[in-house]
Length: 387
Image 1 (tube, rainbow, N blue to C red):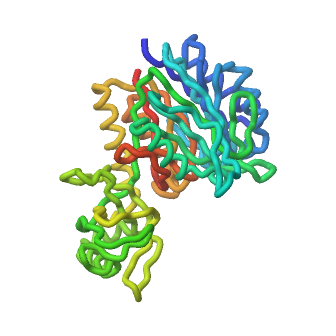
Image 2 (image 1 turned 90 degrees about the vertical axis):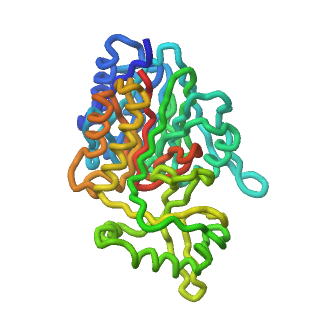
């Protein structure tokens, strides 16, 4: 038999009681299987006592391996808790697979920094990474891991809540770690990465003809700002209406692809412009020869993108429901984007056929685009485990 997953969520007042209840629910869903691995996420007042959360999970589940983090909100059992205190527990019996925990940190070194504690990823099925956004150089680490182990899916999120001492609590085995990153290397299990950036391409594709770092100077041989204004002028009224949450730029990450689709673009913000120079500033380095396209984000496009991305993973499994999923959704989604509660949790539950899923609202979501891992914003990323 394949992977067996159980999840639980509790809003009990005390952190230990909430952890006990959530872990017990995950254990019941495993129907007698012993959890080899658990991922735990706590929010609200429970972030102030992460040791009590760990104590409750270990008392109820006794997982062999555990990682987790503090969060601004959690999700599980088809619902989301964006405000208030809650604990979400994801537990799995990997049935022959393996999950190896790691704890990494950034340390000062000559000429900059060095990262210690990262595992060798060669041959891994997937990696889940939970990082402190203030003390861990996640972007640089992801670039290095992509170089070391190309094609290995790396998914996860940046912790989104601080403890009583102002630091970000990460959970590792039976210890609370302040700063750095924790994670899991998975082996001998099938994990499908799912990334829904929630942005709709608008306007034409444009080739970058002059750029340096994050500054694009020319698009299609014209000053970049002029080219962007022309593209905006040609948008339909409906497309212009989608730009209320800001103008974005998609950078194609599959340069040899003949026909670009939505998932082929890494979506980043347009951060500014220099009218005198005619250049634009983008939230990622761009090289000459890259293909870019304007993108817009609204609730409808984010909803559609998530449903389509989940549907493709379900289809890849032959229509069979997966064993379960770990979910990392942006703290800018939820009610503030969709206007209703539980959107992402409900869609995951519906499209994946009720497969157990749990996760948290992140300050940045980690997932691959074009086979390379990136930190995203306003995105939902999932590690979908085959049954």
